[in-house]
Length: 567
Ligand code: NOJ
Image (cartoon, rainbow, N blue to C red; front, side, top):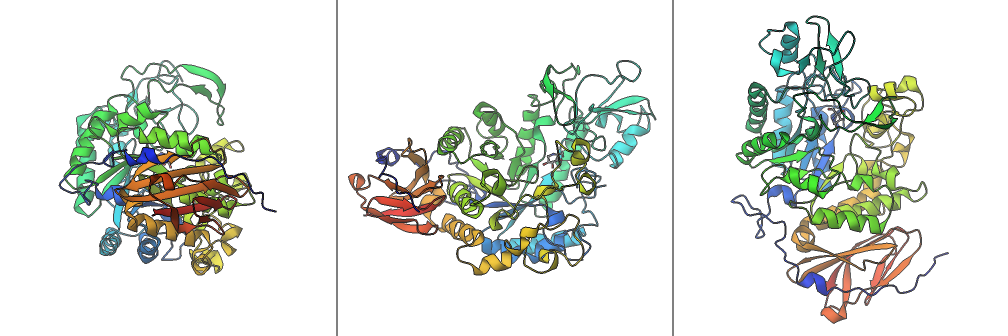
């Protein structure tokens, strides 16, 4: 039975009329609209985990030809840029985040020729390619490291961070790896320790060495020449370490790996990182490219540092604040959106990626997950800012973690089991259709296909106008065609409502109202439109029976209403 709530809080929409539209806009010769926006401000980004997207050669692992074969799907979905997680040669200890050659493609994914074909085909469809640049560390199999470890006087010795231990079997300090254990490994060849923030197979590059900086900057130039439109910079926070290697302060308690918690005072977010980002940005600007940062910012002050003074560092520091709102709370989202909007750069919105539990499960209640998946799309795809989607999110893919330790592929799941099961659950193969292996591959995939592929897959959802996929497509289309959603400012309305998150996007005389019901009961909300020259709204996209009548919007449980205000 539907519970009808009182016609709730009357909103004031006068505020938005006087807010400047130009907030956050930038001016540049490369602007794509009258507001000075750049291409990446209009674009919708989509992260592809290449192992899991589409397998063209049926070896159980996805590849570049597979991605190329799905470009029409991505174009039709409304994607303008794909960020491909690392596809460079790699021993695959961290599934590509351990790069052994920055200027080639791992044969598992294809060849440089396949890359060029993909780039040409993507360009033909107006899709930009963003590569994942693993800046903090290389693989221990990279030729730079192999030389570095060969002797204390090797040409590349100072390309990594080598130190004597404090004493016999004592690493240089107390720093622990994000992936468990000490972040120092003793190498018997030269009897010194090297530093690794992640796995021992991922030695940290020494960014204090100008030769490292030059070589890494050249890598970006090399890919720009091949048609890449930017990079997602991996693990930006961890680029520099304290030269004196002071011990980090130890905090109470232990983590999933049994290591003491510590404050990363001396090995994360050191100010020197900003010099590097400014430099990388200069090179990017020469190519009209975008830099996305994996930046785990604790607050807006930290986020602002990554935008840089006058926006001269990262254009899209991935603000992970949203991924920490793990409940459907209008108040919490309002707070986060307001914070991001108060920052000094253009907002970036992310709800899922290859390292965290999928949004489908983080927000879903187990019963209404499909409605909630649409609700989340209605939220982050209609905000002022650039959204970065994660493959499979658009069909409501579920996190499916391994249930037995022996099935775990992600090494952190092996070392952290059972507290830390690793990240396999959010990296399962894309669900294309109902055929064997969900149409991902004819061979047994590297990770099992979740049983949900029978109900949640591209082929079936494409035919169902009520599916999660159809709703994503609808909203993405609106986002590209509606001026208010594309360029308009953001004004929250009805800010005391505990159930419905509502806001306006306004561009000149075009105003779009977005109302998102985050509760499990139907809600009726009245908006004071007439006072401001509007009488009602014309529905642009709504879930189920959500609708408008005069000034009152009725939104079904976990429903979405998006409407253009009309006279
Ligand atoms: C962040 C990446 O997203 C993650 O997958 C990887 O394991 C670490 N950086 C180390 O490169």
